[in-house]
Image 1 (cartoon, rainbow, N blue to C red):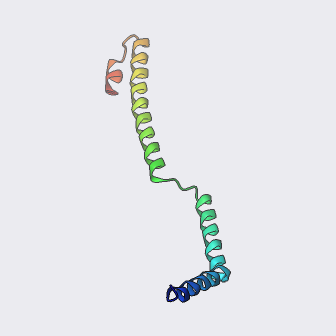
Image 2 (image 1 turned 120 degrees about the vertical axis):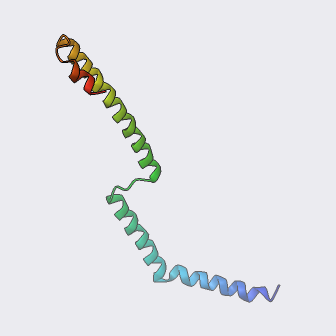
Image 3 (image 1 turned 90 degrees about the horizontal axis):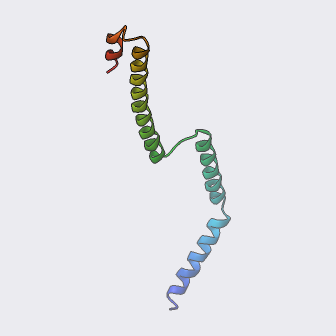
Length: 90
């Protein structure tokens, strides 16, 4: 056990030196700066992006359906005066 003791003491001193060195402060400041920069950029995760892309796809499908319904209602209102217009949206 006495052979391991000097290494443990050296390791403890090295850890203490790192804790009191400016490198630790620089690392902490760099992390804070990067987090702040990323927050200002309003970045999103890939998962959030994928969810929004799916929502957009569904909204576009819904929009196409509603446009077709509006065209059919307009054609009905006009008394079928322009059947080509109603059929062109399909």
